[in-house]
Image 1: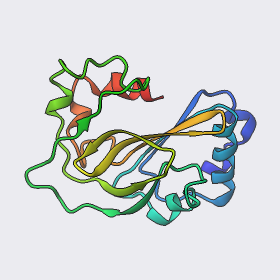
Image 2: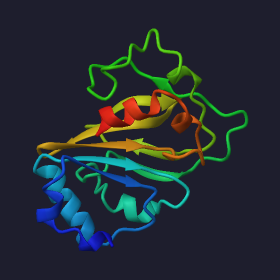
Image 3: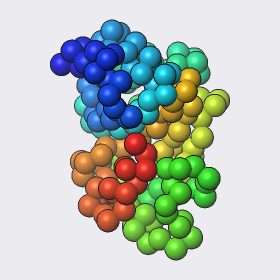
Image 4: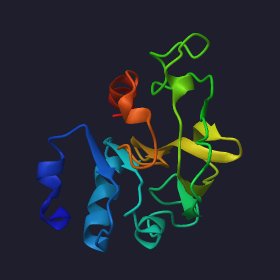
Length: 171
């Protein structure tokens, strides 16, 4: 199905969201690279079905589309862990007063993908030493990676009132 998205159709959108995609052809990955390099936005959200090999083929030793190299899936965190949202001038977090909001602080993560950020990647949120939300420029566009699921499989974030505004700011 992803291969059926042609470049002309993709150009009608400002952003594309990949959620827990299990695999992508090299043809589709090339179209994504072109879309973002021409000014599009890409949100890559991982999850239990995401293929490390498929996503890592877009990392290309810091030069590719992906903001980080994926290195594995965390064990279940018990108790669930809380991400730290870093004070940043990034548009992704601009509508949140990180010194006052409570909802983002109530976010709990049960699982996530381990990753190593590319040299030109900004880490917007993390779990200790492990990136959670990463942002990288690519050509005229940008890519944001979300290292946990976008549903409640690995996190309670979709159940909070800040979830939709956060996703909207990302895209």
